[in-house]
Each structure stands twice: as structure tokens, then as C-alpha cells.
Image 1 (cartoon, one colour):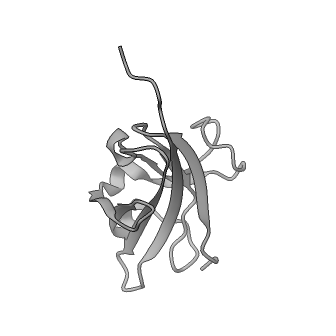
Image 2 (image 1 turned 90 degrees about the vertical axis):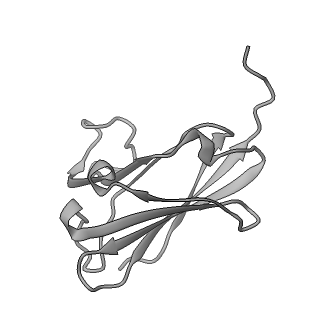
Image 3 (image 1 turned 60 degrees about the horizontal axis):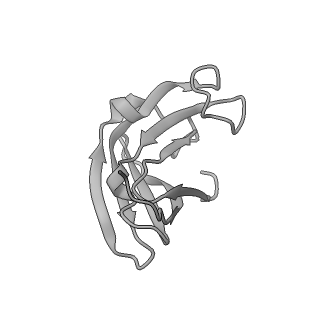
Length: 131
């Protein structure tokens, strides 16, 4: 398994964020829908308080084949592609000037250990109001 990497993004408070990744399992093979029994997302604020916990629907966030820039122009990391995509909720970043930690826990169907994807998002304040 590759060493853990925590990527950092920036966004505005109250805005949804898209997390994309090329995920491999404990066997170093790309994950597929059939290789996972569950994916759980937990979001923490910079004080370590849990903002929310929810189960993700595997068939909506995991692709069985790698998706490339031609499939989704938001992927700009490389030409190999991604197999995980989650659009967060606007309520996941409730206030600005806060560093949020998104921890995705993947549980494989096999008896192997769970593995993680971690993203940090610095939420910036919005000073205007709608209207």
C-alpha cells in the first residue's frame, strides 16, 4: 500500500467540494464496486469535533474503470484517471475560517484491513449575503 497522503483543497463556506482520486485497495489493485462492502465519510472541524458521519452509496461514487479527462474535465492530475468521485454537501462546510478534515473509510469485501482517503479543505469566509 502506498504511503498516506493528505491533500489540501480550498473552498468557500457553504459550498460543495468535489473529491476525486485513483484508489487502490490493500492488494494494490484499483478498487471496484464489487471489491467494497462499504464507504463511510466522517468530517471533522479543526478542533477535532465531528461535523457529520454518513455512509456513501458505492455505486454512485466508485467507477469500475478509470475515468479520464475526456470523461470528466475536472480530473487534471494525470492522464491515467480516477475511480472515486464524491460531491460533498454544501452543509459540510458550515463556517469559514475553518480547516475541515474529510476522512473516507473504505471497507473491502475481503477480510483485509480497511483503508482511507483523507482530504483537508480550508473553508474561507463569505462576507456578502444573498439578496
